[in-house]
Picture 1: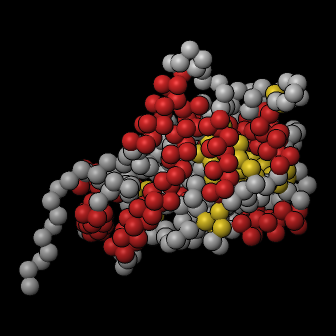
Picture 2 (picture 1 turned 90 degrees about the vertical axis):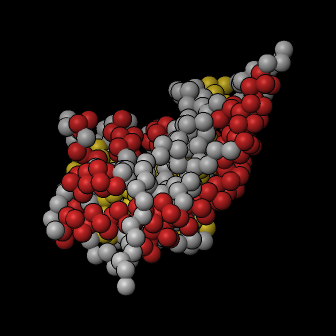
Picture 3 (picture 1 turned 30 degrees about the horizontal axis):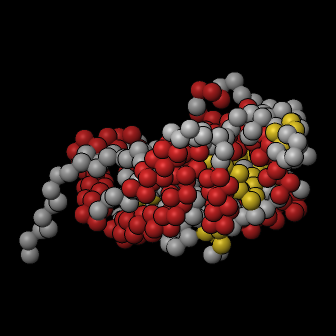
Length: 389
């Protein structure tokens, strides 16, 4: 029997645009721009904002949504709403984008890093509970890569200890937990619509979703200089300009209308890759690749005990020999230079520290073909074989 013919060499980049951009998105932005050309046109009245917020809340399963200009500002607004005081602590995972912890640090909190679950790589409720003290004000779990974390476990913590749960849902638009949207979980959830996410609002954007209408109103005021709109304009608190623009809201509506289709397309690629990597002992496949996963990132891990090489060495071979580009989500947060002078606690985080050296995000997107997926899997297997030799 002849050996299988290796696939033809191709180049697989890690794309900057994670979703699908189509004519309806272009038309939505154009319509806003053309309306602004009229004698009475402008960019400030935002009927698109109300429509986008309503549609987002419905899709994500929350009572309210407040759209803002990024997930970073969404997290910042939630930290402001908590009225953090010096000495207050916020518990976060170390395996996340720097903003998850940075938002708490920026508002004066001391960050406490708790470990992630060894299977899901989401923040572990048990690890969090071990670090809760009288100073703990909030916990920020992350729906890592689009997989919902243990919401029931965090609900129990909130009830038992009185801490506020603010979810970082930057990866999780469209994610489901036990069949339900995750937007109403905890006190609030913070979303990202940045360009590499599954949907984008002209490159940037974010939102706070919540079932707490008092919090929604507070966040709504904070994002617009503290204004309260009504018969008489009032400024009730010191706020900022964290607004999303009119064209972004218009495009947010068209992007949201196709997000379930985008996630379904990504899930097909994820499932195919999952099957192709089955039995490759040196590659730890991600958990939860099934319906309900938001499919933002396919984050595999290199079993460096079996491979006896660093992630950098492995990825260098994958890139140089096969032209497959991968990404790193994420280094441990505290390893960034910005945390050199920050007071934090990262004790008892062995899973995080190990995973941060192993994680590899594979280049899977809606535009990735079945042949591309096969090529990437072949390249990984050949690189594993080469490293083992």
